Length: 424
Image (cartoon, rainbow, N blue to C red; front, side, top):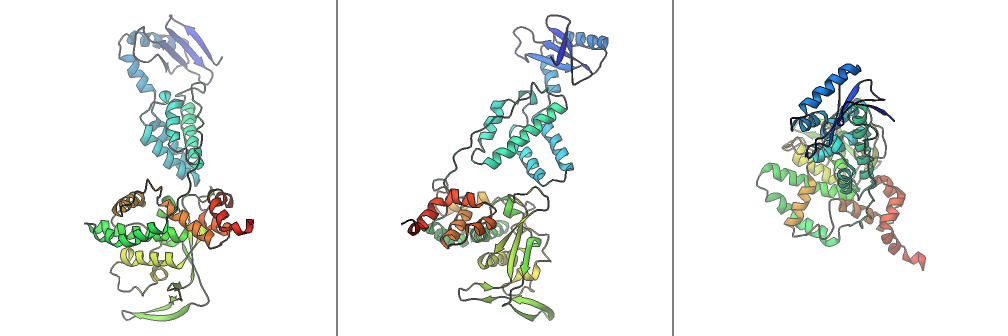
């Protein structure tokens, strides 16, 4: 056995755990007590005589009915306290995955932070994990975070290995069918978005809704994930590669000569012929633990127009030096530390576009819950449109930061209908 008990009375013992040099007191509860079943507390001494005296002192105080509960609470740190210690250790290590661990632990603290470590049981953990049963990734990272909290509690001798719970397994729910927008959705959005912007009472709200308008276009034209992946895009993440058919000329504005500016031309479809624009995605699911890792995606003409609109209206508002429709090329370096989708009226990077999407759907009289659409539907629509256009699943997977297997799994019904002639 890992513990050797020395009996002082029927309800009072001192013992030594093999992992500690000090004696502990074990005190059973009084009959009929509604407080803790028992109390275990360190005497903070390895001397048996001193440990015995401290045990008897504890036993005497125990006749105060509130004493055992008071000591128990004092000696049993909460999930929040241990979680914050784990975060301190994670911040020391220079690992990209630690950013996700810290975010999730903060979420756990917000949800069940007041729970005492010794009261953290499998039911509490399983209830929490069940909220994320739609995603294997979300389940895995949260189970890892609970294990980190529990292991830290063991390391600090708050609980023993025998007392530590095993993080329960939660069955992954069957993935919902990926819902894309239909033509009617996008048509209604297009008809209502400008009124949605203009009817906002405050300038700050109008600016945020303006960003949201072009945020939706960006998602639809790039297949990027909403949320962390896009909210962390900075202008320094854009890479411009020269294209042979670009026209370059000197431009004079406000009596200042700015040389070698890329002047985009409109092609037959009314879109911009310009340098190739790539974007480094540095946050979210980039499938790498390296802190400096990223995936690179292609930005098409429609997405580029949306980006330029945001620069014109938000980041360089009132700037008379802007040249026509290509401010990204002009101000990429000037704005390098700015976040593309961040409003000047807020210090928050994540602009809570999910909430705005819900408000916009309500404005458009669309029940987004009933129709199972969300900001993620822009990504699903992008993938679907690319498959319909006969684009390579491998290229789509690389652009979207997913795998060919995932595309095949979730979009196989669509691809089967599209290629049905090959099966006849």
